[in-house]
Amino acid sequence: MTPDPPALALDAPPAVVPLTEPADGVPEVVDTPAGLAKVVAAFAGGTGPVAADAERASGYRYGQATYLVQLRREGAGTALLDPAALPDLSAIGEAVGDAEWVLHAASQDLPGLHEHGLYPARVFDTELAARLLGLERVGLAAVVAELLGLGLAKEHSAVDWSTRPLPVDWLRYAALDVEVLVDLRDVLAQRLEQAGKLEWAEQEFEAERTAPPAAPRQDPWRRVSGTHTLRDRRRLAIVKSLWEARDASARARDIAPGRVLPDRAIVAAAQAMPRTAGQLMTIGEFAGRGQRRRAGAWQRAIDEAMALPEAALPSTRGPSNDGPPQPRQWADRHPEAARRLTATRELVGVLSEQLAVPVENLLQPDALRRLCWTPPTPVTVDSVSEFLAGRGARAWQIELLAPRLAPVLAEIH
Image (cartoon, rainbow, N blue to C red; front, side):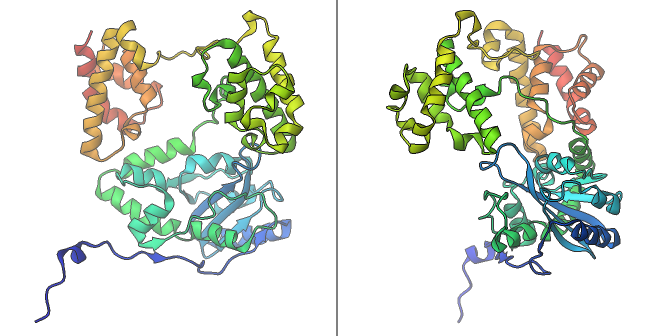
């Protein structure tokens, strides 16, 4: 008698089929006006949504420029476009009209597409859809594997896409990234509708599509990793001066700043406060040949910071903003606000579990903090709704949260 298979086998997930070759082969990169004209004609004659992706050279080049745009549409096939050679791609947007564009993590790619004249009329973000459905892993490869049973290799995700010519293996990877986006979109849309979340998703997609450009960061030098370990203003001035010198060099050479001078080197110099280039080169992070060659420039930046008068040194507290202080300070400075934040966070956390939607997707954390620090007067469902709308909350978020938050806020004076 043949024994029954073990129970574990019945519960085993379906096998993932590796996706190794684009259906139409690996396209050549389009980098001429004539080639772009052919793509425009093909996409104008295609049907359905446009699958899109964009590749940058983060970690290699200065800034966030896009170095490859991948597009696919039914009836048009896949196009790989070189935006460095073809900076104006607006004709493609005109060709597809009001077609929906399908992207994964659209907020990352839309700014780059905008720089090249591509402004989708409608967007479907497969990563955001996966978040709203409560999927544990929302990277493209993970979502494709879970919902389509296909395996996408991601070994080229962090390569230098400014390389020319691009290796064929990279082009294959790039083409495959848009190969199944529309199929994935259809599965996600069906699941969203079944879960009663499709309208939520559509509001999120539209907010993402119409989001204004990000405002410039205040004191971007404060983002140097490890700066929090420095407690005095003179050392912070060294960080600022070295950051500015590094940024100028990186911009001029079109190299990622971290490749010019790592953050850890900046912090090590600020801790040591060397007085000469010779002393600077005794610091381990400055022992390499490249840093020795530029030691004079780095020391000049340090000397400038050391020569600043006390009044010109940066604050240890960072730039002020119009928002509330860090929540860890609330208990002492505003006990009622601290209690409101604790109570509302618990409420949002419970709702997050019930709806299988991450907390940060239910309501932006900054909006909740501001609401708890200075709630509207009087606290009503309408006043809370108005407050949340003013902080960018979507209609579905307000409808869910305002009736729940208002009683909690009104109770804690």
